[in-house]
Length: 450
Ligand code: ADP
Ligand code: MG
Image 1 (tube, rainbow, N blue to C red):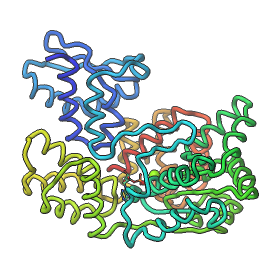
Image 2 (spheres, rainbow, N blue to C red):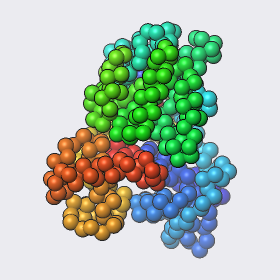
Image 3 (cartoon, helix red, strand yellow):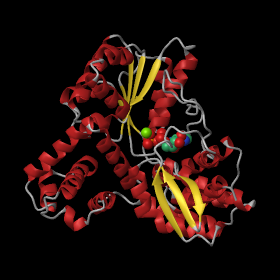
Image 4 (tube, rainbow, N blue to C red):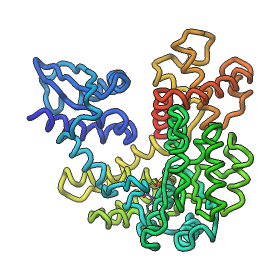
């Protein structure tokens, strides 16, 4: 077999073995560069990924590789700096195809950041989201005047981004491109501000975000505590609001529960319409599954649909991930997936995803990520290799779980001022230090995916 072809098969196996998030974060951009004398040489785009894959997935990959080629003795990992901007390889094509089994790939419009795959028509409506949906429809047709700002909140994977994007797309169509929406994640908004400050280009950024008719900002909870970003957002908000421009915001929690959000921003948000999206109930989950199957022209038996809908309850993204796995299996075997196999796949996926995040989980992931012992994390050592992970762990306990400073302090055998100091230090750092920021994004991703 050719390298690419072989590696493509290995990745296909790995995708089924590890979580989607881990796969996308660590393995998607790997490639097989050499295979000599029983040694597989695997390239990864940066040192970070190399170390991680080497430490975490070495055995896993070796097992899979040996299924394809039993003569392989060992794996070696290298960094290939050119990979990130390198050409597309056949291996990636296959993976992309797998990932898009559900949810066809469309191009994101660079002016609006809208992806046409999200539409109001493809959004399944039920008791858990009908209010949000009705408001979205109303806003798309009466931009800026009806409900302003519009604030939508709810848990992960419950359709907030879908709805935000769909409003933007609907506006373009309904108003024949005369009303200009712009979608932005709050991470992107933040990094734009940081860039503008560093490069003295604030005017450009002001123009970019104030010269629109509809500003859609996703996951606003991430700007909480980032002073400069909040400041700029506040002014942007006012400038738009005073001109009857529509502002649409999402968050994983209601405004009053974003602990670090400035009071004046919070009260602005509370002046508009606030709605939530909740967990879909059984009938809705069935409807969502059927819609996804129909959109991609694929089928599962009714009993398999029932198995999935009964067990995957709290996250539509997770539901899609599991559907992908089932369809992947079906495609490989070329026959309808048996109930028993479907049950097993669903069970193994749900177990790892449905857990709620706990303190222990945060500490474990942070320790693993930085390759330190969990005891060191809460211990007294002042070694540099331990101090940063410890501060990150404290930061995340506060950031993700909203743990009080005194109880964070207690967990680490320190007082609450240390916890506050750590939180603030990391919070400041992530605005300045993109590699730390990147690490935190990855760690959060790993935590959220169990
Ligand atoms: P959130 O932003 O709330 O974390 P997303 O909007 O990204 O969640 O939704 C996750 C995935 O689930 C997306 O692919 C989205 O299209 C899909 N999804 C969520 N809710 C629905 C729904 N009601 N109908 C159809 N698809 C949905
Ligand atoms: Mg989202």
